[in-house]
Length: 346
Image 1: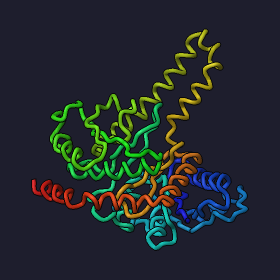
Image 2: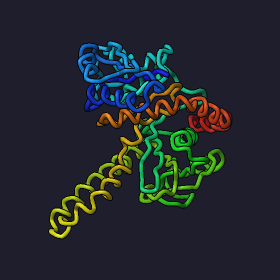
Image 3: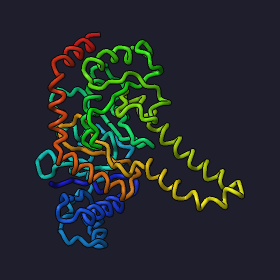
């Protein structure tokens, strides 16, 4: 297997991406995937000299342009066709790579993947589905920002794809699905959630109903489905709240003499808590619905996040994630398309 890694994408690139690639090779050795680093040849040459690659599993493909985080995704093809991000996706399109991994501009990766790789048959809209770690394991949040305005049939497809993904990612059989709402009753919510509920009951296995935001971290559902606008707000609220609480906790310890003395005793528990809630442990988020393995890492990923993302890409390839999603969608295609036509007419 070959993985095209956008070496210039992300806040800490290219150092984080290069180190992540070699840490991956170091752990998995000759049985691992081959990593194709896309970026400026000279810069990457200088960096890889710092690492030993006895298995010759890392190589460089020159891509002189870099996609910035504030650039308009739809214009990337015209303005930066030789960027590391676009060329990495192109390698998957022409069959010279089996997956693409990037920490770069999310919109640019989505647009590039859609334009070059297309969508899985029957999928109306691809989606972002990050894994959110919790004390009981975690859950998939879908959508987390790719689609701000959606129809009920879109949410059903999101649920089906996210179920397939978490089965592959965590090995959970028949994962439970909940619809994010302001109450647990079927009649609660706006027009979107009320219309989606009966479709979920009919077409999504192990659908457990609505879930309120305050319960998403309690392990009540393995997949939480919502529109991208709401999902992105929820995701960033969780990230911000956890970061704030950890800072608050540390400041509180420092303000009490007794707590300062006992701080060393609490250190292992704090370390375990940070690790269990660290997004870098789980790596990239797949662009579900794209007809190819396209993995989006967090923009601030360090080498640990890159390494985890390469592991996730390899797992998705080995377990035929795209084929599995296509099969599951095909089972519901006729009914979902009928609803989608009705939605488009309304």
